[in-house]
Amino acid sequence: MTSSPDVIVIGAGVLGLCTAAELAERGHAVTVIDPGGPNASSVAAGMLAPALESLLEDLTPEQAGLLRRARDLWPAFAEANGLALHREGAEWRGPEAAAAASRLGDLGFEARVTSTGLFTSDDWRIDPAPSLAALARAPGVSLVKGRVARLAGDARRWRVEAEDGRTWFAPTLVLATGAAAAIAGLPRSVAVMVDAIQPIRGQLTHVAVEGPGRVLRAPGVYAAPAPGGVVIGATMELGRRDLDPDPEEAEARVAAGLALLGVEGEAGSTRVGIRGAVADGLPLAGASGQPGLFLALAPRRNGWLLGPMVARIVADGIEGGAPMADAAALDPLRFG
Image (cartoon, rainbow, N blue to C red; front, side, top):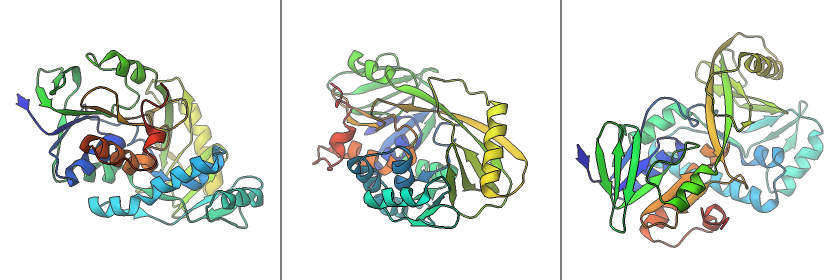
């Protein structure tokens, strides 16, 4: 079987599907190829958290501003794609709340001290599973299940071959494969970039308890609303790719999350996802330096927050449009 869309996207995580939906809205026919099953974007709490991420990561005003601008793209993107955007804010229940609120204010975020910590209205969230499903159904997007085995490209088009022999051709290819190893046939310069991405293992556990209706965070733990309860997590294990849950880690994290919520409950299923990151913690988004090949990779733990920004940068690059101001910060060639 062969197919020839305008653009092929390899990977159906948040960066791949956001990019596919953005391109489809601009009139491109997009085929997304993905092996199926859970990925790092589905094993996530869906936090769009420029404020508390800036606080936890001690970001500079410039870095915090980029995250805030990424968040500001979400209302229009959510409306265009029929996604439910939750804007109820988030709470931080850590030490020195007054100092933390002052720090957030200096970074341009709204924050006020509460009896339990601080509250910011600047952090929002999205529901990962229904949002991924909606993006995959966007008009102009065709999602096919398959594992890509090899690539071949020249100045005219890319050839994408699946393990089962199916073949697709397109003039433009977007690599959105998360922390996976480089696919056979990638140009060496791109394969080196892909293989330099550091895997970061994270796990979260669903607990069927009633939460406060917003994200709660504290040092080393978060509890976020989810269908039928909350998800509790915050693990960041560098260099690990194994997908088997760690029961002891899950038990400790759930205990901390329940203490944060001030309730009792029984842990449900624990899921594991592997995220990717590069040295500065920002994605690789844009042209790869090879004809017709673009990257949408390595968002660390802010894939959902950065999804629409990455999508716009990649789509602008494909169309040859003027880049948005933040494109340079995400340029895949910025380390060269």
